[in-house]
Image (tube, rainbow, N blue to C red; front, side, top):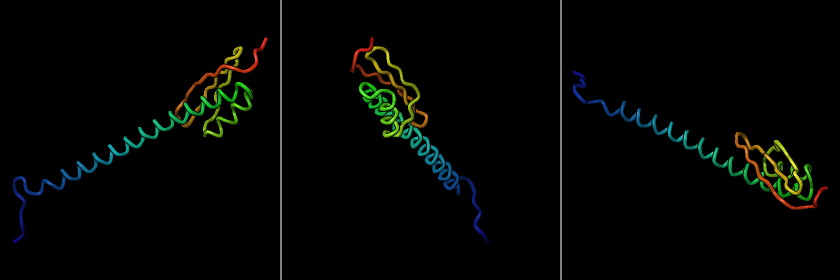
Length: 105
């Protein structure tokens, strides 16, 4: 005759499948979080570089440097000697300011 599972026999397979599925979900969530952290860091770096470039080169230099760093410039503003730039990398947005350059009347 065949074997019959009684009691707790055979319960390891469903438990292992559940633990495996949980592991996959956690790995996917961790990968997404890591990607978001990297995008935020790239956006901050691009915003800093674009703001510094804008001090001497204006809006065009800021835009070029943002693009060279993998970002899209969202806004650019000059208030006296202060350049403020906002950039986006995927879903991450960062703003940076730099001071210097010629004084405008």
